[in-house]
Image 1 (cartoon, one colour):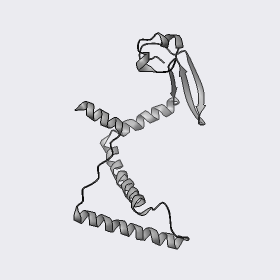
Image 2: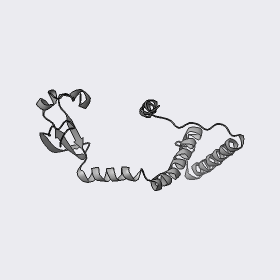
Image 3: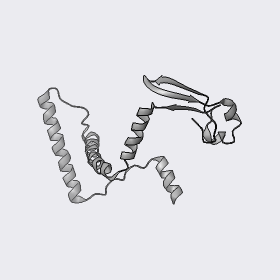
Image 4: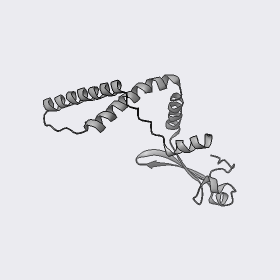
Length: 148
């Protein structure tokens, strides 16, 4: 492994973190202390990297590339709608908890909750209240402010 400044790693070792296999890579502390880019590279005495095994890393990169395609975004759009429905049910009707014992009463409560949410959505559709905005992370706010 070579760092951005051209220094070569000194040690590779296989390890486990949380029961999962990882690759641990160390760089020389002597090389890092004299490096002019140390302040932007690491705050530690020397640079250390922990990576996934090669097969997992390549699969992760492949999945991230797939997420940039229009086909994937179209499929995910449906999931986002379902996630929004679940979120609304949890926030409005506390559907993670049941107030009843027994399958029949619990099932009836879920059906009535779904009907109530549908009525709430119909009211929102007819009266047209403003839609909520999507949350923007602090990092994304920073990127947007720098782009402007």
